Length: 355
Image 1 (cartoon, rainbow, N blue to C red):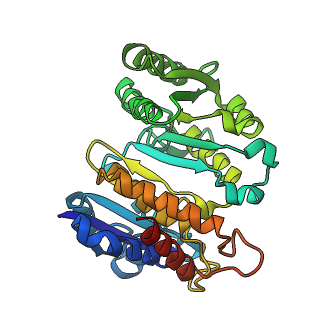
Image 2: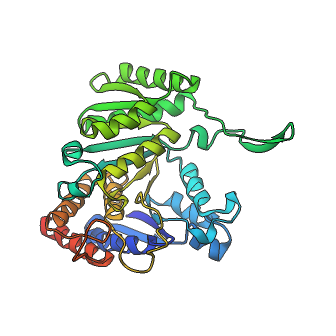
Image 3: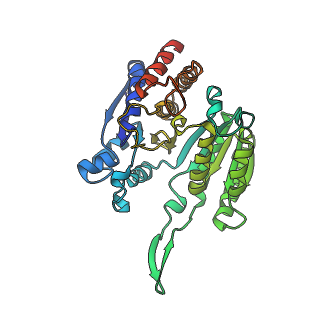
């Protein structure tokens, strides 16, 4: 029996994960899946005073995969840094050793007009960002704000070890082998020693283990321009934590809506799956959120944690069919839009039809 822990979190998280539950229930019997729900993020702070309790972390480590909704909101912004909802997310990723963040950025043909770029630019865009997630400047020590000579000074350290770079590089190359066989690695090796190490290690892994995969390197500033200029020429993009965070959001804008983008954070054992969008507290409770990113995240869960590639492909095809039929939620449509739950129902109908 496969176990999934569902953490709806805050804002629209509950609404979009409810649509995922419809899909899980559809496959539950044939795939022998069971799931439990628990509090996480701000919802956990309100009840337990912390964003991630030891009990929920234990459940996550006992599960085959974790599906998240979204965390955060204005209600908790004034809390100390270590008590904010986002801290719970960082801790969960760290404790589960989910070192590689996977962010597909696919422009569905039916939504090509939703992109802020010209059709001729975004047509055929299907980028897969692999971001290192548990190292780099977000976790480097020491980190501080302190007074030096009467003035405040802040510091964060950008640190990577050879092993940290190698393991996420292997993830990128393996994924590229199942796609279009190309990896573009981003760095700033011209000015940062740690980024020279990044480039050296990625090149070594490529030459020793993945010569069949095409590899090129781009400085992050140039990459930010090229992703806008020629997005359809990219396949897999590999980057460190900070650069990957930035470039994946840029890729997100190509697709037309954050409500369309799934993500996965994986390690050697665990997997955490969540839509890219935030908790959107301004529309929470209105049943107008787009559940597609959450449903596609569930599809990634079936693929990367449960090794059920066929179900992942079925879910993605069902989403595509639903969009081709003209169904839209408010974020991607202008008139005759569906509610969150109605969109979930239409996708489920197409899953049933295609299966």
